Image 1 (cartoon, one colour):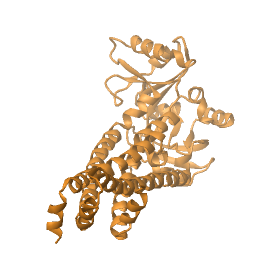
Image 2 (tube, rainbow, N blue to C red; image 1 turned 180 degrees about the horizontal axis):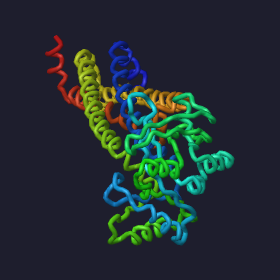
Image 3 (cartoon, rainbow, N blue to C red; image 1 turned 180 degrees about the vertical axis):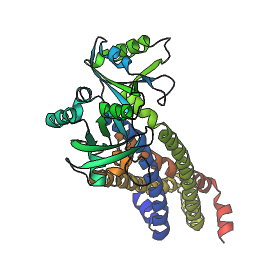
Length: 388
């Protein structure tokens, strides 16, 4: 005898309750799957932003501590180093409020293009960057945000140095998510000397590009060895590791969210279990009759467990499909609104899909096993006494 029809018929007894239970499970699976995409999305974003040949060299004590500018020349002489460029944080504010709304650095204009060939900045723009002392190259995101275009002049008021500098935009970093603003290091150096202050003899971060990805670890060891026992010992790391440190707090937040989501999923288990228990109590008389006419405990247990599992599995599948649709919408939306940041990088991997479906099956089975077992083992006479 086939029991599929019996299971489906019982699910249709109270369609509103079945739909509400399925909706609760679907939303729980959707929430869990969306959050499970965050680690994979962050990793994919880091892989997209970072190069496997680029190295960050900074002071071992932290990014707020500088290194001697002369150390940059030593780094360039290391075997396997293709290019190196010293960066100094300018901390320039464009808006009236005086807040720094995009990262801006003073860089070595003759070396920055060789360190970032993957940014695909047109050669003519790089040439103009070296030609004009007040030239600046700006990321597409910042250009779009303020409506700037190549040839415009903008003024930044530094929150770090005693300098308000006027710039001519001569190039654009074509990456849609790039907020960077690069200026000529010599321009800032001359502005400081014009005020009778010492020149710019420091480097905040030295970005290095290795000629061969296989030489990256050796170069990092050599760089750190050069600075050992000096006043400014360095800590070298890959570009991916450097960016990952900035997302460290976000990753901790993701962990907290996943814990909360687990608690939400547990609540959904109890809701589904309560719904299954209500359905069993309503059909106590029918279950007693089925036992009386020869249906065994295993059949009763199996059909009741199947009802809860089918509802949960279908709801979980719907939740997974909604997750895929939601991430696709975020990807499309982030194409013309880069401010979404990591949200536009969420990726629904095969692992996330499997975990979502497994969660829904787990919820259904866990919610249905207790009431199904109770109904199956209850004696017919005891059940009929409760009903009549």
